[in-house]
Length: 226
Image (cartoon, rainbow, N blue to C red; front, side):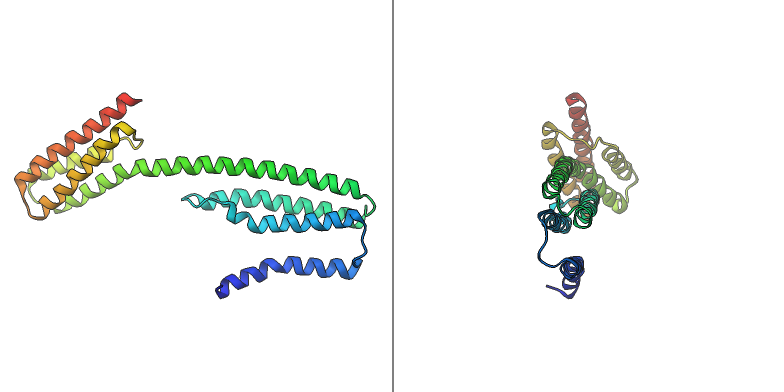
């Protein structure tokens, strides 16, 4: 592990080290059942707090997902810690009550956490689909913008601008029926880039008509698919 990772491990371990030292110095190892239940659940809640970042799915919104899950685990740890201290100091003889209350708190935490993880998974899946659908508009308009900057002929420039405006204003959401047309349009744009590089104006004019017609066709397909 790197030095930074070692420091994070040390930082995470400080609470456990300090808590155990205080616990055994003040109370020793001969404790009632309620105290040991509280002790165990405090450790469990802290470990769950530490592993919460590993429950987050990697995506463009991972930071948001991590914050929501971390806040749930932090709240669970705080409630468990306070509840545990109450049993340790004030009700050491209430073993059954200590266990039942901690189990209920942990069960509620698990339900809330899992529900949020499921919601995050659905959101992440939707974001993946959205990002995939966005690729056509981003790639086509981005490439056409580059071609526009390299086009010198005034008539061709207007054609490229028309194609760019059409692509840029196109609906982001796609459909299986439109994806074949999208791939065809992108392939034609690649050909247009090659024609632009060699300044083949006749070929550029033909390809631009194909691109404009292709984008129009794609947009009509999406309109009728709704």
